[in-house]
Length: 408
Image 1 (tube, rainbow, N blue to C red):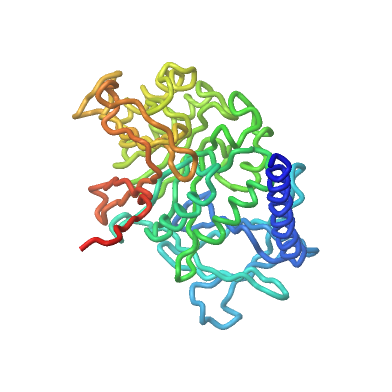
Image 2 (cartoon, rainbow, N blue to C red; image 1 turned 90 degrees about the vertical axis):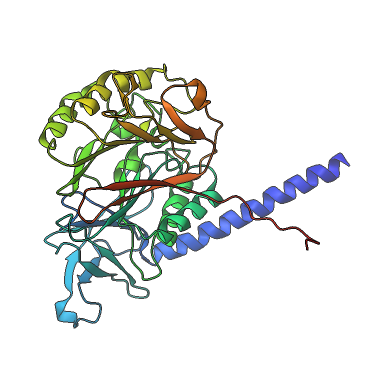
């Protein structure tokens, strides 16, 4: 019996290895043919007039051509051709290509073709409006997509079905920071699923988490090569601000993964002061200052509450997006380490895009928690056309459906 069990286990391992090898061979063949894969859209500058497009294509041709136009039926001479910058980095065999398109029209859909002799890749993207009164802005916020790939893919499909303008992601994309297989799977899933039925790809605004960094915490950017080379963001890239509309700014911070919490304080205060007149000020980072699962007196939560939270309160930040704990959370409005329903800052999180979900603290026993429970989820945010309201609502992965046999 033991021999039979051992044989069964070895057979399962063999077939698993064969399947993985076959998948790798297919990917290698696609890459060697120079097929554009793993397309990701980000912003380095004004989201109403720019778009950065990065993809993988490992064929012999470097610096491929990307063409774009605001009319898919336009004659060829009306398509603008741009030569991509090709690059790689030490930890990967992938050949990457990136283009930043500038001088675009606000709130315009653009059509893109990445040239390839055999299978050119086509899709569209949309810039954001230049003014908040032109239309609603819909975006999603979440984090922690590692480990359970099937759940992550389901969450990706759910995200696309919301038809958002962009997605805010607060870190922990994968489990192994230097695992090329995991990164390939993540980018393959994003490429396949974060595109609407009409062919529009959805941009992502990224924050770094501990699982992107070799060593997790208190490291330097060279310890996160995949994150910094695959997501092209504003400088210095581990913390930055994007003005999404004249009424809405998003600040992204590094919760001590490749930049210390205290070292970002001066920049953070300067940035908040510069944007003090914005009606909506949002912040995202990975480790929760007000956790739903972990100990709030751990080092990094304490540092964030000491160095960043007073600035959030001083400059009246509206909403903070956290992650890391793998659970659903909404805090009460907080100011001066206590509940303040009139002037407090609300924190939401804590990352449920596919990572293993955890049981939370009891909100009845922890004053800062309004709601907290184990759930796969992301948040949907809708900025009203006149920018007077920001609706924030959770979107949960539904439980498995069941039925009853013999029911009347």
